[in-house]
Amino acid sequence: MAVTNQPGRYAPSDFQTGLCDFCDDCGTCCYGMCCYVCLGCSIASDMDECCLCGLTVTMRSVYRTKYNIKGSMCKDFIAATCCGMCATCQLKRDIDRRKEQGIF
Image (cartoon, rainbow, N blue to C red):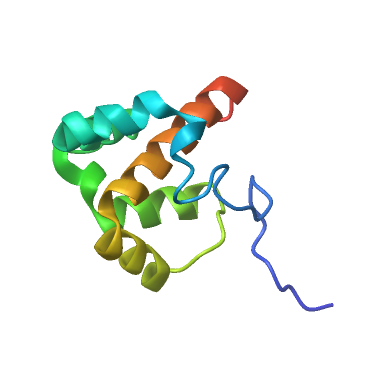
């Protein structure tokens, strides 16, 4: 029998909200619009990382890998480059939802 997936804690999934699902959490989007760097620091703090790491492609990739979220570094790069605000807000929404679910 061939192993096609590495055993892990989480089944493969998608982010819990879409890249442009602003209305799912208007507060996070407003926070990001008013102080984008602060939102990045909040994400980094949630993940026990350096303050500005929350705004990087690497942080998104680390988070996606940790929770077995489908995607790739290339897709992370495109999301962060083409719409950094959307990608950062999506990451924060996902963190907040996982906290609510008790799986963060």
